[in-house]
Image (cartoon, rainbow, N blue to C red; front, side, top):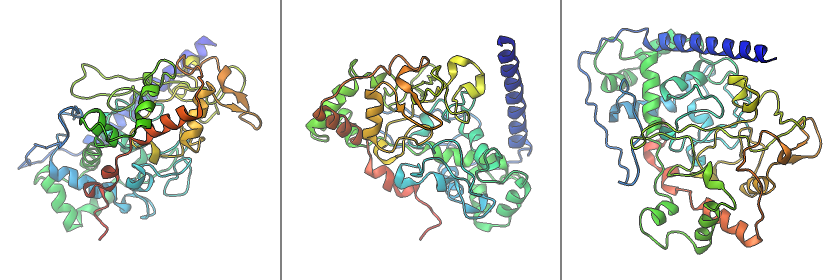
Length: 392
């Protein structure tokens, strides 16, 4: 059995290497012919207490690139149907989620997982629910655009059509040159990915009522109830802060003030199908990548910033409300009484030690919810710099 798992893990590693090589070839197949590179400076416009995102050396930030990325993020012609864009699954008003249980691609095919919020995505050390190998935005954007399992944008095999389309669009041609320089290969798949990634790194939320209270010195920015909720959140009794700590309320994080990336995945006892810790077969978490039995059901703890806007919750969107999420953790795991996924999650032997259950009074639950809601930034979901530029 161990040899079988080792063989499976080896095959996955080999396939991952081939995928990395293929993606790199796709990104860099065009030789650079930049004659006049644009200025490579960018003002993050964030408060002093907030660190800066880490930017790859081969994709420095500039305003023109960010603006191009914004157009591409909302560009529906980058889908097989011409009716779907990155923003279809990442809606600004919902903190760049979509409100659906799981993502639905351009062709109607369902993704097995819930669309993650892009709030502060530039600070994420890993970019998906359960793949520790996906760690750079420039590569991640290739998956929804060209991936086939499941189909999201559905553009596999249409790379040259995409380049030709933008080459014939005078507005876009001008934007590519402004962002990347006046070279014959300014319009390329590589630069499309870089521009989208640059825009996504600007999706920074740092001005919630809680931020103004905790970092801005405004003692009246949140209610007394929310302050009590913060104390509960950071207590050893509830232990929320272990997985949702720090300035981004996640333990998978990177920024320019950290010496190394922090990456973590957790099993929260959401399922326990066979009494031995099994999760639904199409959603087994990190186990899908490593084949290690101990990784069954492990998923990333996402940021809690703007969490009140990003329902439904969990990796598969199977919990509808924040109150129900608190109920799940109060019980130390979810119990499903009937159906194909029936099981007692609190008895999952692979569950994190931090998910041990706790008791709350009615008022304490209200306080905890008040704190979580204080993480909502109205300015972020209304920022015109993040809006669809194609609309009037």
